[in-house]
Length: 193
Image 1 (cartoon, rainbow, N blue to C red):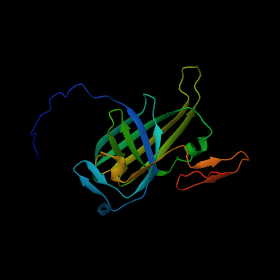
Image 2 (image 1 turned 45 degrees about the horizontal axis):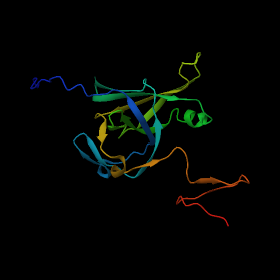
Image 3 (image 1 turned 180 degrees about the vertical axis):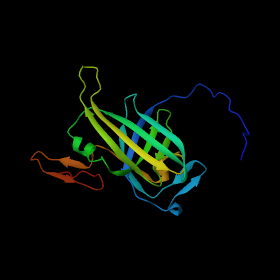
Image 4 (image 1 turned 90 degrees about the vertical axis):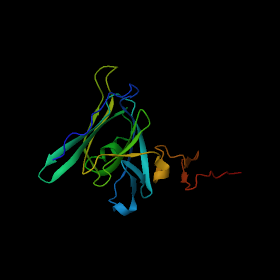
């Protein structure tokens, strides 16, 4: 048995709580040799497209609990997101239920953490609420869970690690006056004379 070898002093009061954004992506189980690490940092990951969800509400939380069981120690990670506003994309939100996804969170301090790196995350619950009064929350509440053998890994830079940020608004979709649209892969606009 290992004894206690050090203490912890109080840190500076420059820590801001809360999440600023969540980046969701389709989970793919990759072997460890396709990723590289330095301690608690993820340095590289196979090229993956991620989608940003802005979190402007103070109720977004990320919790990681270390649990002991007969199989050994594991981390139970729970993420609760609140997406303000009910829009016509509700089916896209509801389609997440039961899906196995990957999630990267961005804290208000600009720190990125990846959740479900090896086992993925499961979207456990989605709740749409309209509130009762003008000041009440109106939007979606999404509960996500993951179970990993290691804690969440930090990411310094999303792009250099292998993540490609895809905008939620498709700037490559041009709609013409007659209602037809053309989607260009390179983002260049076709100019008619």
